[in-house]
Length: 236
Image (cartoon, rainbow, N blue to C red; front, side, top):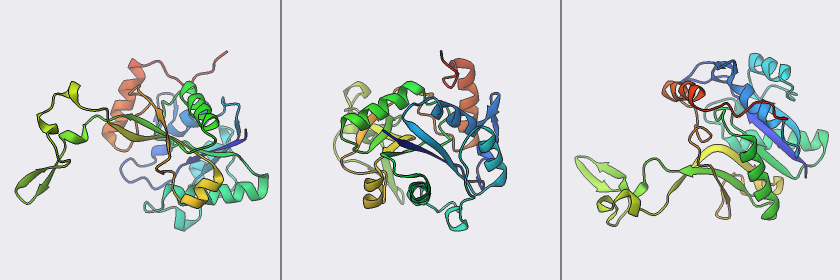
């Protein structure tokens, strides 16, 4: 099986300036995802899609394929992950040949492990290349959430969930952004990584499901480095 790994790394991060090349521990944030992807046998190539020359240089030095800078229309904060992925996929298959899957690895999830990626790829193979998405247990259960309309608080989900004990609530999960694997034809057809037929890759470890979006998230990542053994290390 040939899988193209894609790391999207836009340069214009507003909440955390230069986030993708900011040092986390001893290396740039993007290096965590690049290094772990290079360990996966099924990954035939690792492409970094960026609009930023500095990010491109860092990624190339780490052994990634960076064949171009992303077009301006795909470099805004409104550009979707799907449009970025399709741009990279179309170029790669035209220049390098067809692949069986596109694996999106967001650099903001630095602590995903090789074991987790291997599990995701095994699910992709075992379920006839159905889309696989990483999910984690929800920190806030949707049955305990509310909406506010003016001065009125309403249940977000109808039912008696607000009166239920946490141990009695049904399991709820959130898409954590750590892992998306999809067949090229499905991505082109769906124009999305999400579908009703998605196969869940359940990621229980909180460090692996971390998605760095704010300075608070960055502080959590730095704290995690001191608690968890880094997962992106060379293995014998």
